[in-house]
Length: 257
Image (cartoon, rainbow, N blue to C red; front, side, top):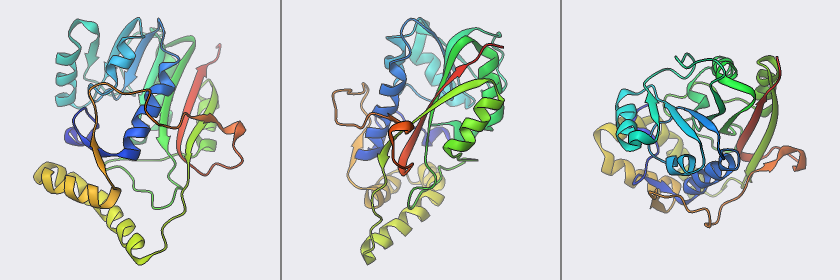
C-alpha cells in the first residue's frame, strides 16, 4: 500500500467515501469501551481519537515505515505503534480484547490475518473489519490490493480459524448509468484507479482534479469524524432480502478452544 494513498485527515474524498469512513468507525465504536485494542493496518491518524477515547489501551500495527513514524508522533504516550506485518506480529498471545482491521483486509492474506488475530485475542475477543463488495457495478480494486472476498468466503475462513461470525452490510447498489456520458465516466473511473498510484506520487493536483471528475463532489476528511452527519448504519445480513450492498462489515468472535 502506498504511504501517500491511505486515507488521512485533510485528504480529498468524495461525499460517499466520507460517509463510508464515518460508518465504519461508528460500527466499531460500539465495541471498544474499556477494551485493550490492537489495530491492524493502522495507517494514519484518521479515526484514532474515536478509538482512543473509548479503549483502555491501544496498539497499532503498521507495515509502512513512513506511516508508522507519523502515527508514533501523533499518539505520543496515548498508545504504541509497531512497524510490523499484521499477519506475523511480535505481540504476546491473548493480549487484547479487540482487533480492528478497517479497510485493509484486501491487502493481506485473509487466512493468515485471521490466524494471527485469533492468537492475540483473549477468549471471547472480537475481530472487527470491513471490505467493499467487489460484485457491485463498476467496482474498482484499490491500488496494491490482493483479494476481495464474498460474505460466504469470509464466514468459511472464520469458522476454520476458530471464530463465530456475524456479517453486516450497508448502501444498496444503485442502477448503473446507461447514458453515454455515464458509461464514459465509469470507464474513465476504472482507468483512473489503475493509474492512480503514479498520479498520487508524481501529479497530486492532477490526481485530485481527475478524482472529482470521476467520483463527484469532493470534501476534505475532517480531523474529527462527525457522527451526527448523514450516513447509513450497517444492518445485519439476516434482515436483508439480497446481498446487493456496497459495503460489508464483520464481527468475528473468538470461540473457546
